[in-house]
Length: 114
Image 1: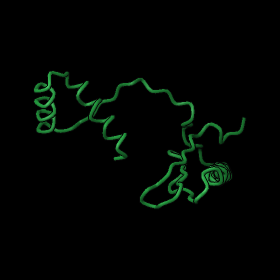
Image 2: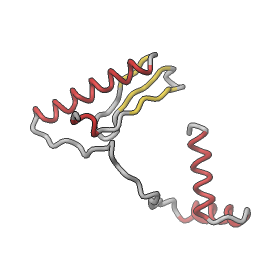
Image 3: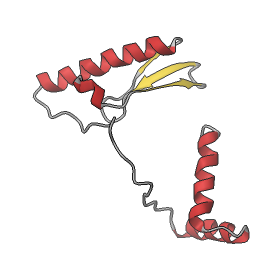
Image 4: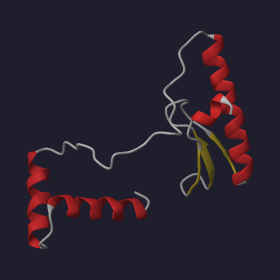
């Protein structure tokens, strides 16, 4: 296994850029782009390897690995009192818990690409 295998690499279509965008969260800013998904991924893998070499040559500690991260399913979100009240009232109106209401809103937002 290579060191770069420990880092999450993402390639996705960008409507805004009209091409595939590849990036590695937590390791490098920016990314690579192109019209061929497989080629973008291959280029991204090369760039990630290069970034890791730069970290090592400069004697800098490597960023925390992102590929094997686990998620608990919980996170705290600060929304402010006014939005908290608004969300709570909306949830009550339709007879849902605040948690269930917010999860549905987040899922709907994610599926619409926002």
